[in-house]
Structure formats: C-alpha cells, structure tokens
Figure 1 (tube, rainbow, N blue to C red):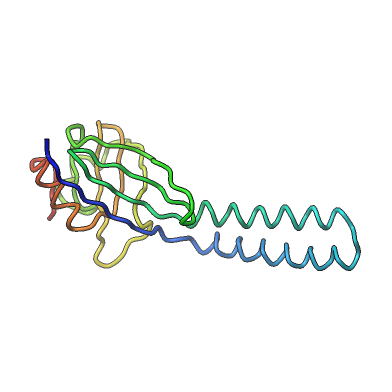
Figure 2 (figure 1 turned 30 degrees about the horizontal axis):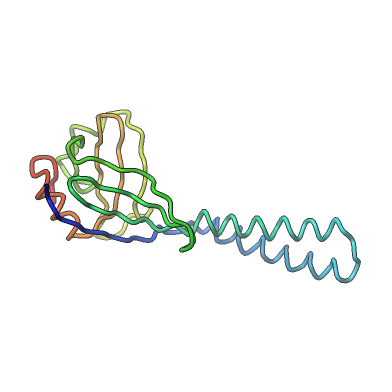
Amino acid sequence: MSDAYVECLIKQKQSALWKVARVLLIIVAVICVLLFFMTMNIIVFIVAVLCGVGAYLVNLFTNLEFEYVYLDKELTVDKIMAKSRRKRVATYSLDRIEAFAPIKSYHLDNYKNRNSKVIDYSIGEELKPDRRYAMYYEGNVKILLSPSEELMKMVKNAAPRKVFLD
C-alpha cells in the first residue's frame, strides 16, 4: 500500500457570457428593488427576487474550482462551487486508465478517432504552453485535467507504462 498523498487545486475560467449575465441580473434586481420602493407593486418585487436568485445561482455554478487528490492509486476529483460548497465528482482508479498524457501528446494519437465521452475538469482554456492533460479511462471516457507537476510525478510512479509526461 502506497502512502503517497498529493492534492492540487485549480480554478476554472469563467466565460465572458456568464459574467455579463450575472452583472445584468444584479443590475435588473437593483433597479426592480428601487422601483418597488417607489411604486409598491408586488410584481416588481417578485421580479427583483427572481433576478437576485438567478444572479446567486449563476455565480454558484460558474465560479468553480477543482481539487485533485491522489491517494493510494486513486485520483479523486472534487468540485468546489463559489468557495462555499464541495461535491465529490468522481474517483478514478489508476489501474483502469488506458493512457494519461499531455493533451497534444503523440502518445494519444491512437485514441483520437474514438467516440469518447469528454469530461472537463481542467482550467477550461488553452494556455501557452498548454498544461492540460487527457486521461482515457476504461475505453469510453476522456477526462481533461490540469494537474500540478508534483501530482503528475506521483501518478507516473504509480502507473509508469500508462502515464506520459512528454
């Protein structure tokens, strides 16, 4: 039993569309509250409350961080929503992975024509240089991650024939 433990926390990039939507919902909510105090119309108050709840939900589901935890040949992914709620998303056993390499690695050329379900737990954007990794798991799932170098070294030590650092 290996006692190696590494954790890595990354923040996913928000799209500009969701940022604009959140700001617009907040502006509409403030305007409706001001109109409510001037007119005392209950419908305007209901619209204000709905816009406020909508802004909260947009913030909750777009302000995401992912935490990768490696422990005893298992990679666990947790989703942290708006720094207030944590949810365990998945646990992956390193014995079941087929390949784990940088997203543009030549080691993944054999897997490019597969119709795999893509699950994105990465930062959500391509940087220069691209530090995202693709993990093919049990033949039908492609998982995108943005792990740290320390995490990748531990995973490489646990499954040296399946993990490529290029």
